[in-house]
Image (cartoon, rainbow over all chains, first blue to last red):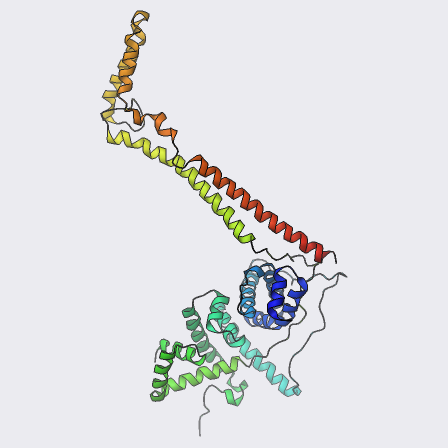
Amino acid sequence: MDEGVLIANAQRGDLEAFNRLVLAHQDALFNAALRILGDEDLAADATQEAFLAAFRALHGFRGGSLRAWLMRTVTNACYDELRRRKRRPSGPLEPEGEDGEGVESPRWLADPELNPEQKAEAKELEHAIQHCLENLPLEFRTVVVMADLQGLDYTEVAAAVRIPLGTVKSRLARARLRLRECLQDFAELLPSAFRLESEPTT
Amino acid sequence: MNFRDVEQLSAYLDGQLPPADAKRLEARLVEDADLHHALDELRTTRGVIRRLPLRRAPRSFVLRPSMRRLAAPVPIGFPVLRLASAGATFLFLITIGVNALVPLAVNRLPAAAAPGIGMGGGSGGGAESTAPAATDQALLAAAPTAGPESSAPAPDLQTQAQKNLPAAESPLARSAAPAVALTWQIALVGLAIASGLGAWYLRSSSDRKFRRRWVKK
C-alpha cells in the first residue's frame, strides 16, 4: 500500500497502518539511535519511544519525507534518553505482550556472509569507527549520523536536529575533521582503499 | 587554507554548495594541490564512516494496544483549540492587569499637574497641597458648629469645598469606566472556556474511539 495512504489512515488512528510504517522504518531509526547513543539497549528504548511519540504526534506530519520526520522524532528520543539516564539509570523499556512476556523475537542479523576472519575484522573496524563517533560531541555526532549514515540532505538534517542550515554545514565539517584525526589511530584496520594517508615510499 | 575552505569542501562533497560557489571552488581545486588533497581526505573519511554496517532492529517495534504509553493520535483540531484557549486566557489576564493599573496611573496625574487644588491628605499630596487641604478641612469643619439655624450656609460651605475639586477628576468619576470594557472580558472568558472544552472533547472522543477499536481486541 502507498505510504501516503498508510499515513492518512494512521493519522485517523489506524494502528495497523502505522505498524506497517514502523516495520518499514524501524531499521533506519534503530541504526540512527544506535550510532548516536552507542548502546543497543538505550537505542532500542529510544526507538520504541520514538515510534510511540510519532504515533501520538502524527497530525504534525504535513507531507514530505516521512523518514526525515521520523529521524527528528528519534533524535529527540535519543536526547531524552540521555537526559533520563543521567538523572536515574533504570532498566530498558519493554512493551508488555498480551501473555505477559516481552515481545522480543529472535535476533535478526543482517551481516553479509563472511568467513570468520573477515567477520572479526569487520567487527573491529565497526568498533573503531563507533569509538571515533562516540568521541565526538553529541551535537556533532548527531549531524554525522543523519547526513552520512542516514543519507539525509542538509535541509532534512537541519529540520531533524532543529538547527540552522549554516550550523549543519559547520558541524559536519568539524566532525569530519575530528573523525579523520581519530581514524588515523586505527589506520591498520582500514581497508587499503580507505587509508587516510598514503604509505611512505622506501 | 582555513576552516571556511574545509566547510566549503565538505558541502561540495555532499553536493550542497550553491552552483556559483561550486564553480569557484572547482577552479581553485584545479590550481591548489593542498585544497585538492584536503577534499580527498574528507571524501575518504566520509567513505569510512559509511562503512558502518546497517544493523537490523533487534526486535519488532510495532505498537501494541497493551503498551502503557500508547496514546491515540492527537486530533488535528486539538492544537488549534488549545492555543485559542490559552491565548484567550492570557488576554483576559492582561485586561485584568490593565483595568487595575490604568486607574492608578490616572489617579496620580491630578496631584502632580495641579498641586494648588489639593486633595486633602491624599497619597499624591505634597507640601504644596497642605495649605489648601487645611483650608478645605477648615471649611468643612466649620459646618457642624454652625447649629441648626444656620443649615442654609452649611450646604454652601460643602459646595464651595467641592467646587475646589474639578468635577471630571473626582475619584468616583475616574473609577466608573474601566480601560477594557466588561463585554470584552466576558467574551475572552467565553472563548477560553469554549475552546478549552472543545479541545478536551476532541481529545477524549478520539481516545475513546481509539480504545474501543484497538484496546479491547
